[in-house]
Length: 289
Image 1 (cartoon, one colour):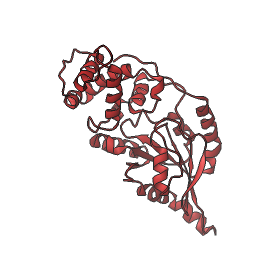
Image 2 (cartoon, helix red, strand yellow):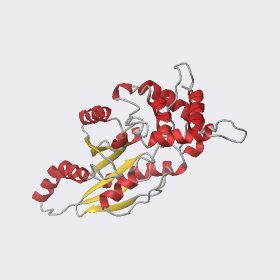
Image 3 (cartoon, helix red, strand yellow):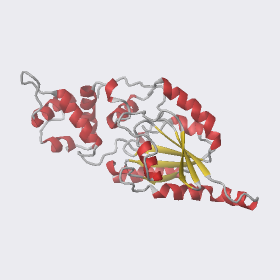
Image 4 (cartoon, one colour):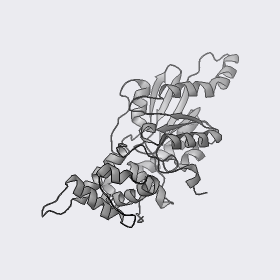
Protein backbone atom coordinates (compact mmCIF):
# COMPACT_ATOMS: atom_id res chain seq x y z
CA UNK A 1 0.00 0.00 0.00
CA UNK A 2 1.44 3.36 -0.99
CA UNK A 3 2.00 6.07 1.59
CA UNK A 4 -0.27 9.08 1.19
CA UNK A 5 0.43 12.15 3.24
CA UNK A 6 -2.98 13.20 4.55
CA UNK A 7 -3.02 16.20 6.85
CA UNK A 8 -5.97 18.49 7.34
CA UNK A 9 -6.51 20.87 10.19
CA UNK A 10 -8.33 24.04 9.07
CA UNK A 11 -8.30 27.03 11.39
CA UNK A 12 -11.93 26.56 12.42
CA UNK A 13 -10.98 23.22 14.00
CA UNK A 14 -8.50 24.90 16.33
CA UNK A 15 -11.30 27.27 17.35
CA UNK A 16 -13.63 24.31 17.85
CA UNK A 17 -11.23 22.64 20.26
CA UNK A 18 -10.92 25.85 22.28
CA UNK A 19 -14.70 26.27 22.29
CA UNK A 20 -15.18 22.69 23.48
CA UNK A 21 -12.67 23.18 26.30
CA UNK A 22 -14.60 26.26 27.44
CA UNK A 23 -18.07 24.74 27.18
CA UNK A 24 -17.58 21.18 28.37
CA UNK A 25 -17.95 22.30 31.99
CA UNK A 26 -21.58 23.25 31.20
CA UNK A 27 -22.41 19.66 30.34
CA UNK A 28 -23.11 16.42 32.24
CA UNK A 29 -22.52 13.93 29.43
CA UNK A 30 -20.27 13.79 26.39
CA UNK A 31 -21.69 11.82 23.47
CA UNK A 32 -19.07 10.84 20.93
CA UNK A 33 -20.08 9.75 17.46
CA UNK A 34 -17.80 7.24 15.75
CA UNK A 35 -17.99 5.66 12.31
CA UNK A 36 -18.74 1.97 12.97
CA UNK A 37 -16.53 1.02 10.00
CA UNK A 38 -13.48 2.68 11.58
CA UNK A 39 -14.18 3.15 15.32
CA UNK A 40 -10.53 3.64 16.24
CA UNK A 41 -9.55 5.85 13.31
CA UNK A 42 -12.67 8.04 13.72
CA UNK A 43 -12.08 8.48 17.46
CA UNK A 44 -10.44 11.77 18.24
CA UNK A 45 -7.95 11.31 21.10
CA UNK A 46 -8.65 14.92 22.15
CA UNK A 47 -12.16 13.95 23.27
CA UNK A 48 -10.90 11.54 25.95
CA UNK A 49 -8.77 14.32 27.44
CA UNK A 50 -11.55 16.90 27.23
CA UNK A 51 -14.22 14.60 28.68
CA UNK A 52 -12.23 12.72 31.32
CA UNK A 53 -14.54 13.81 34.18
CA UNK A 54 -17.82 13.36 32.30
CA UNK A 55 -20.28 10.52 31.79
CA UNK A 56 -19.72 9.04 28.34
CA UNK A 57 -21.83 7.63 25.53
CA UNK A 58 -20.18 6.20 22.42
CA UNK A 59 -22.39 5.98 19.35
CA UNK A 60 -21.30 3.61 16.61
CA UNK A 61 -22.96 5.38 13.72
CA UNK A 62 -23.45 4.00 10.19
CA UNK A 63 -23.69 0.56 11.84
CA UNK A 64 -25.78 -0.55 8.85
CA UNK A 65 -22.69 -0.14 6.62
CA UNK A 66 -20.33 -1.98 8.98
CA UNK A 67 -19.54 -5.66 9.47
CA UNK A 68 -21.97 -6.84 12.20
CA UNK A 69 -19.57 -9.29 13.87
CA UNK A 70 -16.82 -6.69 14.05
CA UNK A 71 -19.26 -4.08 15.42
CA UNK A 72 -20.08 -6.49 18.26
CA UNK A 73 -16.35 -6.75 19.03
CA UNK A 74 -16.03 -2.95 19.12
CA UNK A 75 -19.10 -2.60 21.35
CA UNK A 76 -17.50 -4.93 23.88
CA UNK A 77 -14.23 -3.03 23.69
CA UNK A 78 -15.81 0.34 24.54
CA UNK A 79 -18.11 -1.13 27.19
CA UNK A 80 -15.06 -2.54 28.97
CA UNK A 81 -13.71 1.02 29.10
CA UNK A 82 -16.89 2.06 30.94
CA UNK A 83 -18.67 3.78 28.04
CA UNK A 84 -22.33 3.29 27.24
CA UNK A 85 -22.38 2.02 23.64
CA UNK A 86 -25.23 2.47 21.15
CA UNK A 87 -25.31 1.24 17.57
CA UNK A 88 -27.13 3.65 15.29
CA UNK A 89 -28.23 4.05 11.70
CA UNK A 90 -28.93 7.77 11.71
CA UNK A 91 -30.49 7.70 8.23
CA UNK A 92 -33.29 5.27 9.17
CA UNK A 93 -33.31 6.25 12.82
CA UNK A 94 -32.54 2.76 14.15
CA UNK A 95 -31.03 3.02 17.66
CA UNK A 96 -31.80 6.74 18.00
CA UNK A 97 -34.34 6.34 20.84
CA UNK A 98 -31.73 4.49 22.90
CA UNK A 99 -29.66 7.69 23.21
CA UNK A 100 -32.16 9.57 25.40
CA UNK A 101 -32.74 6.42 27.48
CA UNK A 102 -28.99 5.98 28.00
CA UNK A 103 -28.62 9.64 29.03
CA UNK A 104 -31.44 9.25 31.60
CA UNK A 105 -29.83 6.09 33.04
CA UNK A 106 -26.42 7.75 33.35
CA UNK A 107 -27.93 10.77 35.15
CA UNK A 108 -30.43 8.93 37.38
CA UNK A 109 -28.23 8.95 40.49
CA UNK A 110 -27.25 12.63 40.20
CA UNK A 111 -30.83 13.73 39.47
CA UNK A 112 -32.09 11.79 42.50
CA UNK A 113 -29.51 13.53 44.71
CA UNK A 114 -30.62 16.92 43.34
CA UNK A 115 -34.30 16.02 43.88
CA UNK A 116 -33.62 15.16 47.52
CA UNK A 117 -32.01 18.59 47.89
CA UNK A 118 -35.15 20.24 46.53
CA UNK A 119 -34.19 20.62 42.85
CA UNK A 120 -37.38 19.19 41.33
CA UNK A 121 -36.45 19.66 37.67
CA UNK A 122 -32.94 19.76 36.23
CA UNK A 123 -32.51 19.18 32.51
CA UNK A 124 -29.55 17.05 31.44
CA UNK A 125 -27.09 18.82 29.19
CA UNK A 126 -24.97 16.79 26.80
CA UNK A 127 -22.26 17.73 24.34
CA UNK A 128 -22.19 15.80 21.07
CA UNK A 129 -18.84 15.55 19.35
CA UNK A 130 -17.34 13.73 16.41
CA UNK A 131 -15.07 14.07 13.43
CA UNK A 132 -16.38 15.65 10.18
CA UNK A 133 -18.87 13.72 8.09
CA UNK A 134 -19.57 11.07 10.73
CA UNK A 135 -23.31 11.88 10.54
CA UNK A 136 -23.71 14.18 13.54
CA UNK A 137 -26.16 16.64 11.98
CA UNK A 138 -28.33 13.86 10.53
CA UNK A 139 -28.40 12.21 13.96
CA UNK A 140 -29.42 15.42 15.73
CA UNK A 141 -32.21 16.04 13.20
CA UNK A 142 -33.52 12.52 13.86
CA UNK A 143 -33.35 13.06 17.63
CA UNK A 144 -35.28 16.33 17.42
CA UNK A 145 -37.64 15.12 14.71
CA UNK A 146 -37.07 18.09 12.45
CA UNK A 147 -34.21 19.78 10.60
CA UNK A 148 -32.39 21.72 13.30
CA UNK A 149 -28.81 21.07 12.20
CA UNK A 150 -27.46 21.73 8.71
CA UNK A 151 -26.38 18.57 6.93
CA UNK A 152 -24.13 18.06 3.96
CA UNK A 153 -21.82 15.57 2.27
CA UNK A 154 -18.82 17.85 2.59
CA UNK A 155 -16.95 17.40 5.88
CA UNK A 156 -17.13 20.23 8.39
CA UNK A 157 -20.43 21.94 7.53
CA UNK A 158 -21.35 22.70 11.19
CA UNK A 159 -19.34 25.83 11.92
CA UNK A 160 -20.30 26.88 15.46
CA UNK A 161 -21.80 25.40 18.58
CA UNK A 162 -25.58 25.39 18.97
CA UNK A 163 -27.87 24.19 21.77
CA UNK A 164 -30.67 21.91 20.63
CA UNK A 165 -33.58 20.86 22.85
CA UNK A 166 -34.16 17.13 22.37
CA UNK A 167 -36.82 16.72 25.07
CA UNK A 168 -37.95 18.79 28.02
CA UNK A 169 -35.29 17.10 30.15
CA UNK A 170 -32.45 16.79 27.60
CA UNK A 171 -30.50 19.54 25.84
CA UNK A 172 -27.73 18.87 23.37
CA UNK A 173 -24.79 21.09 22.47
CA UNK A 174 -23.77 20.45 18.88
CA UNK A 175 -20.17 21.18 17.96
CA UNK A 176 -18.39 21.41 14.61
CA UNK A 177 -16.61 18.26 13.43
CA UNK A 178 -13.07 18.17 14.74
CA UNK A 179 -9.98 16.35 13.47
CA UNK A 180 -6.64 16.36 15.23
CA UNK A 181 -3.65 18.34 13.89
CA UNK A 182 -1.76 15.48 12.28
CA UNK A 183 -2.42 11.85 11.59
CA UNK A 184 0.63 10.31 13.28
CA UNK A 185 -0.42 6.92 11.98
CA UNK A 186 -0.68 7.03 8.18
CA UNK A 187 -3.12 4.09 8.23
CA UNK A 188 -5.55 6.18 10.31
CA UNK A 189 -5.40 9.02 7.77
CA UNK A 190 -5.99 6.55 4.96
CA UNK A 191 -9.04 4.96 6.61
CA UNK A 192 -10.52 8.38 7.31
CA UNK A 193 -10.07 9.25 3.64
CA UNK A 194 -11.61 5.93 2.49
CA UNK A 195 -14.81 6.67 4.43
CA UNK A 196 -15.06 10.34 3.38
CA UNK A 197 -14.04 12.04 6.65
CA UNK A 198 -11.29 13.93 4.83
CA UNK A 199 -12.44 16.20 2.02
CA UNK A 200 -12.06 14.40 -1.34
CA UNK A 201 -11.07 17.71 -2.97
CA UNK A 202 -7.62 17.64 -1.33
CA UNK A 203 -6.78 14.02 -2.21
CA UNK A 204 -5.60 12.17 -5.31
CA UNK A 205 -8.64 9.90 -5.70
CA UNK A 206 -6.92 7.42 -8.04
CA UNK A 207 -4.12 6.90 -5.52
CA UNK A 208 -6.68 6.61 -2.70
CA UNK A 209 -8.79 4.08 -4.62
CA UNK A 210 -5.74 1.97 -5.51
CA UNK A 211 -4.90 1.84 -1.80
CA UNK A 212 -8.52 0.97 -0.94
CA UNK A 213 -8.44 -1.97 -3.38
CA UNK A 214 -5.31 -3.35 -1.68
CA UNK A 215 -6.87 -2.83 1.76
CA UNK A 216 -10.11 -4.63 0.81
CA UNK A 217 -8.22 -7.47 -0.88
CA UNK A 218 -6.49 -8.20 2.42
CA UNK A 219 -9.62 -7.86 4.63
CA UNK A 220 -12.39 -9.09 2.32
CA UNK A 221 -10.72 -11.17 -0.42
CA UNK A 222 -12.78 -11.45 -3.60
CA UNK A 223 -15.20 -8.60 -2.77
CA UNK A 224 -13.79 -6.17 -5.36
CA UNK A 225 -13.50 -8.83 -8.08
CA UNK A 226 -17.07 -10.00 -7.46
CA UNK A 227 -18.57 -6.49 -7.44
CA UNK A 228 -17.02 -5.49 -10.77
CA UNK A 229 -16.98 -8.87 -12.50
CA UNK A 230 -13.22 -8.84 -13.01
CA UNK A 231 -10.31 -11.21 -12.39
CA UNK A 232 -6.85 -10.34 -11.18
CA UNK A 233 -3.90 -11.93 -9.42
CA UNK A 234 -2.52 -11.12 -6.00
CA UNK A 235 0.62 -9.73 -7.67
CA UNK A 236 -1.34 -7.00 -9.49
CA UNK A 237 -1.26 -3.57 -7.85
CA UNK A 238 -4.27 -1.46 -6.96
CA UNK A 239 -3.89 0.83 -9.97
CA UNK A 240 -3.92 -2.08 -12.41
CA UNK A 241 -7.13 -3.31 -10.77
CA UNK A 242 -8.59 0.20 -10.99
CA UNK A 243 -7.98 0.11 -14.76
CA UNK A 244 -9.81 -3.22 -14.95
CA UNK A 245 -12.76 -1.75 -13.01
CA UNK A 246 -12.91 1.21 -15.42
CA UNK A 247 -12.75 -1.12 -18.44
CA UNK A 248 -15.47 -3.39 -17.01
CA UNK A 249 -17.75 -0.39 -16.45
CA UNK A 250 -16.98 1.06 -19.90
CA UNK A 251 -15.43 4.26 -18.53
CA UNK A 252 -13.41 5.80 -21.38
CA UNK A 253 -11.72 9.12 -21.98
CA UNK A 254 -11.11 10.76 -25.35
CA UNK A 255 -8.79 8.52 -27.36
CA UNK A 256 -10.25 5.32 -25.93
CA UNK A 257 -8.11 4.98 -22.79
CA UNK A 258 -9.72 3.87 -19.52
CA UNK A 259 -11.06 6.74 -17.40
CA UNK A 260 -9.39 5.79 -14.12
CA UNK A 261 -10.59 8.99 -12.42
CA UNK A 262 -14.20 7.98 -12.96
CA UNK A 263 -13.41 4.41 -11.88
CA UNK A 264 -11.82 5.76 -8.69
CA UNK A 265 -14.85 7.94 -7.84
CA UNK A 266 -17.21 5.04 -8.55
CA UNK A 267 -15.27 2.64 -6.33
CA UNK A 268 -15.15 5.10 -3.42
CA UNK A 269 -18.86 5.95 -3.75
CA UNK A 270 -19.84 2.29 -3.88
CA UNK A 271 -17.59 1.32 -0.97
CA UNK A 272 -19.04 4.16 1.14
CA UNK A 273 -22.59 3.03 0.29
CA UNK A 274 -21.74 -0.61 1.26
CA UNK A 275 -22.39 -1.83 -2.29
CA UNK A 276 -19.32 -4.05 -1.97
CA UNK A 277 -20.78 -5.44 1.26
CA UNK A 278 -20.87 -4.40 4.92
CA UNK A 279 -17.25 -3.82 5.85
CA UNK A 280 -15.23 -2.76 8.88
CA UNK A 281 -11.61 -1.81 8.26
CA UNK A 282 -10.12 -2.31 11.73
CA UNK A 283 -10.45 -4.20 15.02
CA UNK A 284 -9.31 -3.33 18.56
CA UNK A 285 -6.29 -5.63 18.13
CA UNK A 286 -5.06 -3.34 15.33
CA UNK A 287 -4.67 -0.41 17.72
CA UNK A 288 -1.08 0.64 18.14
CA UNK A 289 -0.36 1.24 21.79
